[in-house]
Amino acid sequence: MDSHRQLKELKQAAPYIAVYSLFWGCTYLYLYWSKFNVNPFSYIGPGEIITSSGKFLFQSSIFTLGILLCETFFSTTEEDEETRKRKIKDLKTIAVIILAMTATALYFAQYTVSFYFAALGFVVTLTTPISYLDIFRHSFSSRPVRTAIAALIVTLPILSIVTAQNETKEILDNTGKLSMIRRSSDTCMAGCILIGKIGDYFAVLGKSGKVIMIKNDEMKQFEIYEYDFGK
Image (cartoon, rainbow, N blue to C red):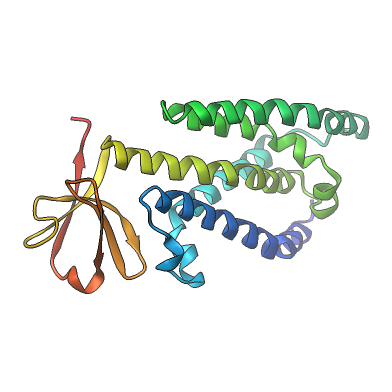
């Protein structure tokens, strides 16, 4: 396969991928911060969305890269046209079943975190069938690239939900290892759970369970440490 052609196809698709990723980055930020009754877009501008949702987008990029590498080194040859048409014909039925299973997993995930990852696993099974669609075949000549782009498209929505819900659940339930902030005076002398840094503020969860926004210039001297609430 012509690597120059693959790079050209990826370059052409890059703006669309960037906009799509940015949208789900915004969704992740909203889902995360709304759990603490904070509107993130009141504190950050458009240029800060990427950095604020960097962890989520980085995880998505690593996942997509993993799919690309697996398809590059372990994929078989292209399916014939008859096989491809049969799989596309079955796609609607498969999609309905998978999405129903995903919705069910997300519902029960509020009780057990492992269901979040089950939901992600269900959605991943749609990656290969979706990559057979004409829009992907006409846009990308390489099967590994087609599959990786399809993986990014189908997993970003679930990853945004999974990551936000998993992170906020740990903070609100005080479970696992959480980042803490302790200051020598005023707020957080006994330690507060760090929700995150957004714009010009540090957001922390006090002992009372209330969210406290501390401006950067007030954080002249502080300690960040980890505390395992599971002990």
